[in-house]
Length: 220
Image 1 (cartoon, rainbow, N blue to C red):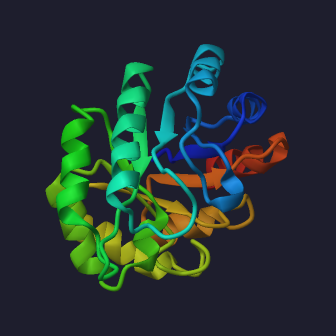
Image 2: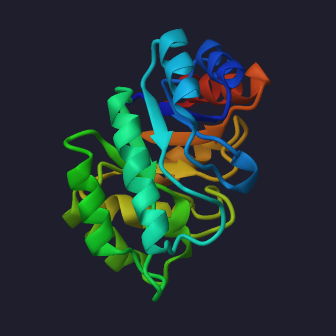
């Protein structure tokens, strides 16, 4: 079974590097130093024109907490409309409530606003209190994919929890491992959790993603 490699990028140069290295999909962000925010439309257009792999776009108004004010949610709605207008292949977001749980109402709203465009719920999931309940909420809301390290500092440390999430998901949502995924550990992560997708930072070094792609070609 082949494993899809998604590369997280924040520039046109990084996008091209990731594609050359063999990435199957991009997550395009701005400001990855704070975990990623919404990229500007000019960058979205430049990347889409330059690559021939799917481009997912982050919808996030700022770094920090995943609990958002009414004003920030309005900004996210505008950013989502912008991303859809620029014909992205999917969007990435995460919204929690003040009880540190998935905000079921808001997440379902954004899935509906996406109008069938795939929605990934990002690593906000890793800070919630009840991941079992949270996963059910995401499935009910219609989220396409969950990016997670299983609540651990790295995907390798969270591999057993990732396996439980994959089992619980029962094919209703894609579980994608992210969190220090490297060529040296990706095979172990994928085998332990029975994963079909992994996520890693690209940066400008082609070897970063290439090592993951090569390791998967040997191990899967």
